Length: 157
Image (cartoon, one colour):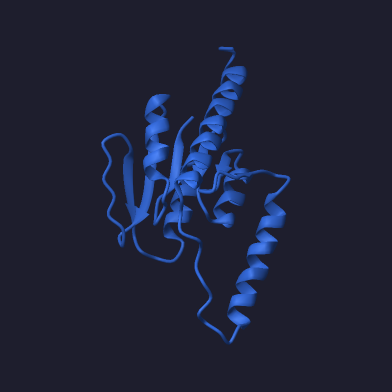
């Protein structure tokens, strides 16, 4: 198992790194050339700044049983399609049961933003300590579940 983070403007990189190190899980942060990331624990892969370049690189290197951290529903859908686990920076797990609805909502929201003559739509709310705590708990729970399933599959449990 490995953890991959769509790290462009990702507010939970430090939390992921802390939990990954706690469980000794190899972790890769992917970002484009517009972002500079350094890590003492994680491998950092810098991808060209093309549209969706980070997303495609991440999906090309993740495998069944890996964990993907991304706020992009499309990336999450592709990760699920490969048999990987996926989690949003809010702590919400992407699943086969909820991904279609999330993709449709994202599409409709994007369409509404494009169709609006008001281009001053507010961005996301400021991130709070509670948001970070919620993500940390959910992420650690996902890591433990993924490790347990991995152990069942290779016979170590």
